[in-house]
Length: 234
Ligand code: ATP
Image 1 (cartoon, rainbow, N blue to C red):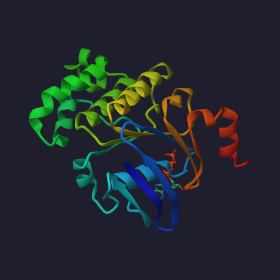
Image 2 (image 1 turned 90 degrees about the vertical axis):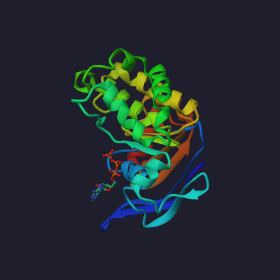
Image 3 (image 1 turned 180 degrees about the vertical axis):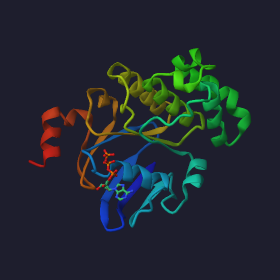
Image 4 (image 1 turned 30 degrees about the vertical axis):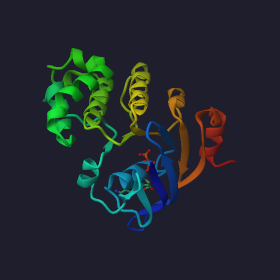
């Protein structure tokens, strides 16, 4: 289980997180939603080791990870795909995917992992030899996810996967995330709004000003309730 226990974080004097706790089991998809500046990215960066919490602990399968560096966390199966789908535009789709092989404990597994991932993302199979820059924004986001997934992550976090992606492709990206969870990965999806396709989440956490202000299942958050929460009128 991923267990985030009462973590706080700040940038100098600016508080960013205040006593946040959450749990994600293997195979579960957690959506973290909240307005601009709520602390969502900071939370993901704490889990990935880029920001050190000032308080609290983070553990993965009983092992404390909140004191580990990002490179060690990658080897322990923690992946963060930041917003803006970071892929190498001049490299082909295949070359981008080969970079994911660096995270595999046994590089000889790469051909099998590549096959598995291409089954999950058939559009990438059709484009293997094309430079990534020729893909649409949504396809580049899928490629970034596929690259992260090839290394068999224990936990995959994706910050605003719908940013810069054509509306009609968003369900495809969320379906890919759901399928990754179904294969046993813990998945965390961060979004500013609870878009209808995020109903694929098992749990939802609403963050505002660094604090969890509500948690539940997607059904607990009709649009009006989120508007109330975000406006702080509840
Ligand atoms: P967004 O949806 O805009 O990405 P967010 O919910 O991810 O927002 P964070 O980016 O985690 O929120 O920001 C939380 C708080 O920390 C905000 O007040 C923000 O201004 C501040 N902050 C974030 N990054 C830094 C930084 N590198 N230096 C100083 N303050 C920062």
